[in-house]
Length: 292
Image 1: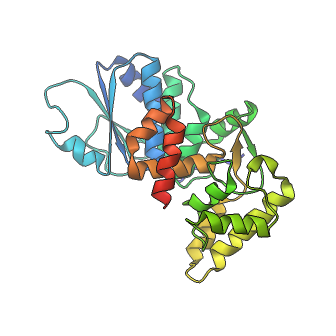
Image 2: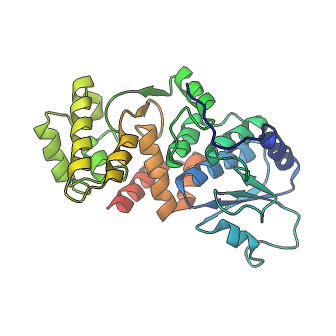
Image 3: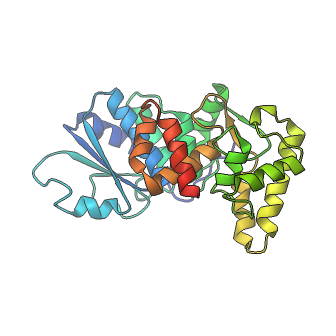
């Protein structure tokens, strides 16, 4: 599998941060409100919780600005600050990813988790990787994908990357595609009927997946308001990794939900990562509202 990086990577960065976290009296994580950063903050939260390390997570559109604001960050404590973002990082003790590292934040956070002795959730990390605009297996995520495949957690197939098993619901509310039927479940149901495709993903075979994927790709790239960028974007929704026992039906659908939560209720994404009960349904409701 491919492993690509566009900038040099410090092989000791994850170990350095893990050592600092393990000895910190308190950890304050400031995350940017995007799908990748939320996945990374969630991975760190799980690792810190597993190690019984006290922490607090703050997510916003300007985490660096919040961290630099003395009204947000107490100036009289000795807590360790970690900034999870692709933007400005010089105001924190540590950054994920480091300034010279172009990998998705979730890939780096997974490495930190391993250094803390906590196995990272490969599905969450890979979903964050996709939310960052990367492809599973590249930009440092090869080991995560290999773990997921060898553990039977994912299986690549034809079709579309949506978070639900109900394809009418998934296609209508997907933010990975922008087509004439987007936001209209009845229109998608008619499309499925015209294609002789089932509504339930469990009833699909290879031919049905191919028919649906081809039709969505054509509708997305040839509709009147479509742009060349739309044709490129739809490729991220094709040939998904099905998540056999994950919270959502595909990795790409998981990434779509994370991005929606980042825009609407980022705290819910952290609760999702920590395994809070009943969060999946609430997350899907937020995703549908955001898509609409």
